[in-house]
Image 1 (cartoon, rainbow, N blue to C red):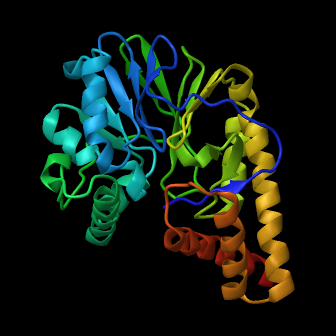
Image 2 (image 1 turned 60 degrees about the vertical axis):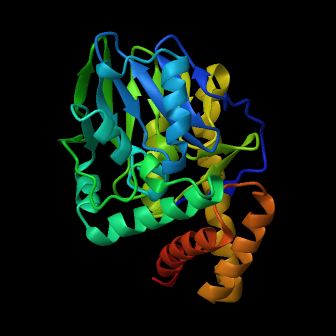
Amino acid sequence: MDIHFMLCKGVLMVIDKPGKISGRITLLGRTESCVYLLDGGSESAIIGGGMSYIVPDVLAQFSAFRVREEAISRLVILHTHFDHVGIVPFLKARLPRTAVCASTRGRGMLSRPDAIGSILNFNRFLLEKERPGMPEEQFGLPFDRIEVDEVFTDGRHVALGEVTLEILEVPGHSSCSIAVYCPEEKALFASDAGGIPYDGKVFSAANSNFDQYQKSLERMSRIETDIHCAEHYGALTGDDARGFMAMSLESAHITRGLIEETYLRTRDVNETVREVTDLFVQESSGYFLPREVMEMVVGQMTRFLAKSLDG
């Protein structure tokens, strides 16, 4: 469940329509829910799990872009929030030989019935909103489990045909967040752990632990990147990709300061959550998540920062 805080500085040019990002990377899905095909030649991977309602888009794109489904050997979950695993049950049923991959903590989260129930309910809600009246069975719903076939740990290098997946644990957005770096493409797949490009700016996403989130951004900022692939609102290339982490770090600093200053003024978690949520709903007009979800996540981050301030 994601919330994104605005950095009111700089303008990013984002590739937010499905299609080729590079010779080996193709953006699939929709603008607000992106997954990526990384083509290693003899085998390929889908990186990101999207939301259930993008299944027809992805299938149409498989056909339009002549994707060799039989070559898809891995489906990589970068974190286990509902909007990043929605198409996994459908694709696993369609491609049973494809290995579902996630972090150790991600596998643990996906083994919990309460987590699976929450993922299912949120995807049902957005499916009805985006595709009202369509049978949910066409989207791989319902499901009662998402089994992880292969665990990706920090520092591991995974061969994918002619390219490599370098795995980084990057907690902070969630405790289970990982990023994938492909050195052959100088491409970083950071998901929400890297911040989100939205409306030409960068939004922070320190849902779980603000300290860890900032440390993870600093770690990723040291990686040589020509392509940055986000799972909401597209990908960046060239100078935009190279400058993205610096902007994301600044956004995190501003966002943290705003929440802390509001709490120190009000000394009330609920009032801080209300004020901050009001501001970001106003600033993020058009964002796909409803206010109720945004408020819940603002509450998580406010409580983390309030606890730190109160000692």
